[in-house]
Image (spheres, rainbow, N blue to C red):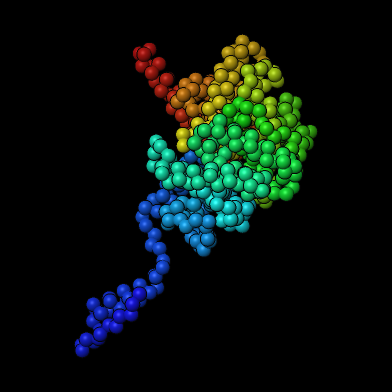
Length: 462
């Protein structure tokens, strides 16, 4: 900026002169700085809103300081809007994956993922494509925006170059393919995502297997495992990795079923349900600050261990069986539905659990038909099945029989208020921080519907 002298008038410095001086001073202070636009702030708000409403309800968004990433140098120059969205994405998705209620703070700035985005152009572009997709969703775009399309096209080209080079099974190559598979999940292109997963499986086998990758880069190894089990839930396909390769954290050691809160349940609960009960009670204690919060990676490993076992016994891709007695199939599917409340929702319409909801809805209807002709009913278990299903994967607007079944089961158990219902549910896997509010809403819907039916019946009789 060229120097310009300001001539002082004989009468001294006036108001207009002072305004001009301040203007010149601020030009110098703001030189080279970018001004934040309202468009950028809107994009951040849209992304923040989507992540807080489309997930399982346990995201606690925290304030993010702009200085966290503003001094970094990205592989490609970004406009202010993309920088802001990417910045917000990193922190919000980490809170979705590692809920602050249960986990210690995950330092995303020091994580391998920020390092990949700064050092690897392929991962950089694929991550931008994912974060831009969420903004597209919030703006209700029916097609992929040009910005999203640009980044995913760049990502594919760079990943292909990487896979044909000497570092085709490096950590950064695995991370880049993982991000492509996540992008396909976001857009419900599950078949393409499964192709990427098969490629990941082959890459990891060439590295010595998932167990070795866990030893070398634990945070990276958990990503393909999570993709594997989530795609199996969404498509009904077998998992590619073996569930036995997922380590069992000490917090999930076999519970002592002969004492404490497990003594009443031990007579009939399968071990996997006892594990879920143990984990849910641990999270309840953590949330009420009775115990220290969990390490984020330990928390993730625990989820994966449970998911692999449940996917294996639920057999979503196979015809239903009567294994495990009258409630066996329904219980297994409900436990899987329970686990979905701990998983972030990737899609714009919440459709990632369609297969599970169809199977669970049919299983509950079959159970109720058989139960009405059987003496082996278990009303407390049925109540947990119905309420957990209704707050996870079954929408009462689509499954019109759900609310009447809840009302009928509560009547059989002589439960007429939410406090006593919660006590009943406490003997099953139930996480108060996640399930109390939606469960209470479902119960209020049930009561409202019962009153409406009673009023309509009285009106007809009169």
